[in-house]
Amino acid sequence: MKKIVIYGSGGFAREVVHLIEDINRNSGEWEIIGFLDDNMDNHGLKVNELPVLGGAEWLEGKNNIHVVLGIGSPKAKKAIVTKLSKYEHVIYPNLIHPAVTFSRFNTIGQGNIICEGNVLTVNIDIENFTIINLNCTIGHDVTVKNYTTILPNSSVSGDVVFEEGVDFGTNATIIQGITIGDWTIVGAGAVVVKDLPAKCTAVGAPAKPIKFHE
Image: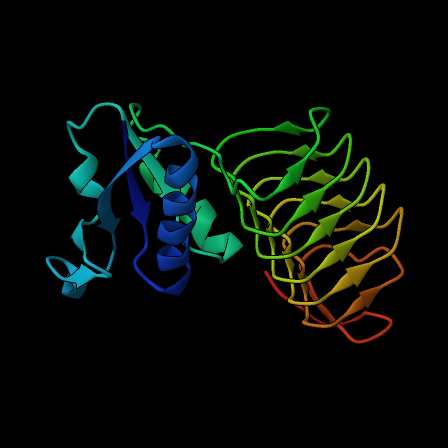
């Protein structure tokens, strides 16, 4: 079995443990060692019967350790990957729930999490460190760039591009052929019918930017 730790120990990290356990029912692939957490107050605690082992420094000198990011924030994911870049031995696996529909014509990088109930059709390109949360549909020829998070029950039509670090809200919908710019946040329940610029927060139906951020 391959050893794996989850970075973070909050709600989504616990959901990732559940995902890994579902994968293990089919394959027996993973030995879950515990959590890593930057909050020193959590070190030594147990979360759902698994230990919080320490922070990033726990990885020092460890070999053949797989790390999965149990944190949904795109900016936090990028910061963690940057922090861990000095640990060259770290392996970032893709975790795909056994119940996911995933075409053999899709491509996927590293460190991605695709949760239960998702349907990904054909010719989809997922780069690195993306989360696709529960019960989303992703249409043909979609591009999902690094650090994106797509929250539950979202509907993504064909030929959509999510640029780096998009945070796509729960139950949001996007029509075909649309591009969402880098680090843009799309609110829950939004309906995206036009391209959205980078670094904005967009809400509503149709979705419109209400503010911009760095």
